[in-house]
Amino acid sequence: MNKAPTRLSYDFFDVKQYQGESRNDYLNRFGVEVVRLKPTNEVMIVHAFVKGMLLGPFSESLLRFYPKTFTEIRRRALAHIAADDRVTQKQGLVGPARPRAAARPPPMRVHEATTEKNGAGKDPPPKHNFRVELKDLIAIPNIASKLKVPTKTDRKMGPNKNAWCEFHQKNGHYIRNCLVLAHQLDELVKSSFLKDYLQEAQDDQALVVAGADQGHEVPSTER
Image (cartoon, rainbow, N blue to C red; front, side, top):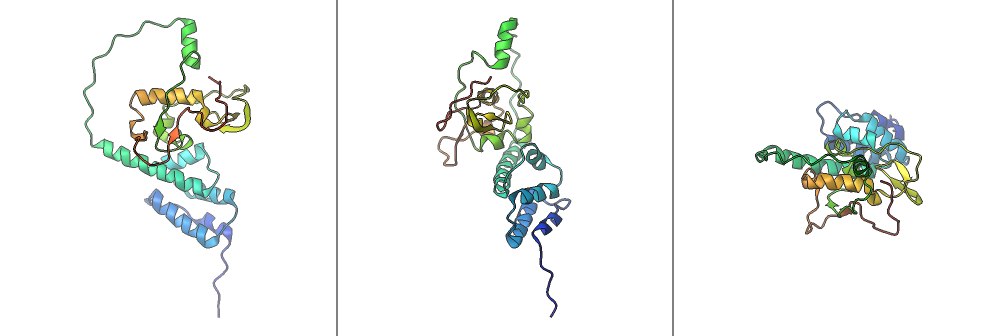
């Protein structure tokens, strides 16, 4: 009797997203192969999934903030699905009339402009609860385009050399303690840009606190 050839773990590199295939269908189809082949190398699984995806907002976010596990890919896919649903709902809404332009504030002096740019002298930003984790929030393309990515520097980002900040892409503090990101997100919240991503107080989903000190890490003083 002829037996079917044994499938090898690297066969899932042959799984590609078809033209017109949804992100969810590709994710599910790839997941079936992972369960069937039972590969143990997470790096290889992630690489195969990203390599097989068609170019789009989700694949761009994966390339920008590369995932470490297939479980992380699934979680971030759910975050993108929720964001896409809210964008679709907003498309049918008519926006309010543009308000009359307010008087322009007086120009800042040089030292004031420098302080504003670096975030020095500001009060700690208020706590904001978002529907997704901060590292996933800043990976959403329309949000990432609004953020000013910190300039690469050799300066220490904080006292904890084992802590990693996905925004600075550097060790020193956790992203939840990143004051630079917290100030930028606070400005986007004030402008209502992040309204659809804010977590309602009564929602029982996991809360992610922007800029809050959760745990024993010392907040970064990087501006």
